[in-house]
Length: 132
Image (cartoon, rainbow, N blue to C red; front, side, top):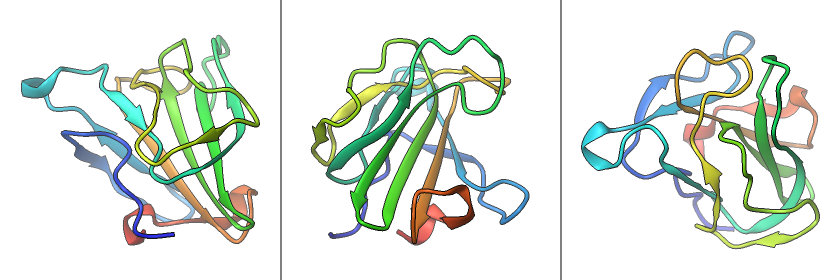
């Protein structure tokens, strides 16, 4: 595996990773390049590990995709709009479209909450995505 790509083009980092406080990276949008419903892309090739679509709970990640890249490496893409483009168990390519940036779940504005897991799929393995 090479260096992972950012999962969205025209990014603005709106909230940085801080262990135990904010366990991911929030990526906003640039209004000069398409506005808030930017396409979200797989950061690396892998297999779709889990998804949630059409979430109406208003809690946690809302609509999300989690991809398994290797035995112990995963990424999570959260707060997506309804209409996830991939299915659980299917392979995805690096740069493949997963869906669109949204504001589902516990979110106050459209953005992508992006998490990187090193060591397993459990939340205890979340690390700073910027390092990868």
